[in-house]
Amino acid sequence: MSAGSNRWGREGSSRVPVAAIIVAAGLGRRMDSGRVACPPSHGRTRAKQFLLLAGRPILSHVIDRFEAVPQIEEIVVMVPPGEESFCADEVVQPFGFRKVMRILPGGPERQASVALGLAAISDGIELVAVHDGVRPCVTPEQIAAVIAAAVEADGAVLAIPLRDTPKQVGEDRMIRQTLPRREIWLAQTPQVFHRTTLQAAYARAAADGFSGTDDAALVERLGYRVAVVEGSAMNLKITTPEDLPVAEQWLASANLVHGANRHRL
Image (cartoon, rainbow, N blue to C red):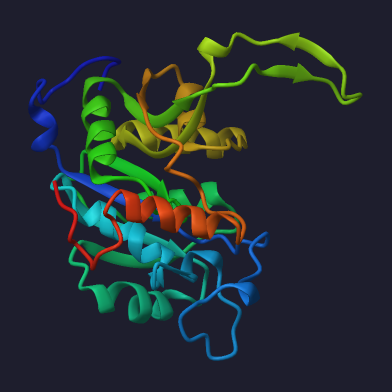
């Protein structure tokens, strides 16, 4: 699809088949799982995406948000190798998720995990949403907004504008220059792209040996247009134990702590 074209029209986002890749294959080394609750581990240390938040695994909250979006037709969950059965038994089955089609072992780093998930989605999918498995506070409305924006461009990302003044600093800790705050946004997930666009970006990255910090970086380098949808600081990425009570408070304030599939568009 050429930049800016839209084969579905302005109201077409509700009809576009979308798959979600939930990237939850990291080990979360900055999270001490011995300090926080997690499902039965049978003697194993569980990654942070399986830790309990508001009484249920973090990853189950994430899947719940995507289950609630009508445009999402299937979900592929990438987990650490060897954790596929645990994820099915403790995260997916107890909450009756219907859109999780595959639980797959991830790669050695995030980009490899997304590539594996991208190769596993079903034929006929037009858009692909990629989301961090430890961002449980995203709302179905935000997900739908990013999908709608991606239909109008080559892709779209959830992001928040920078509020403080950014400084470019050298290795000597001296300021090199002050950057224009109004032009700088902090990228979050989900990030949504046309399937063929994302496949082309990943193929080129593999051929060039390029590693990006997010999916948009791979797409941008090919000259595609990626739109920004304003998100919220609430959509935090859980990294340390201190993030858990903050996330729980935000989930409660947004009425997102009920049972699976209670919050729907």
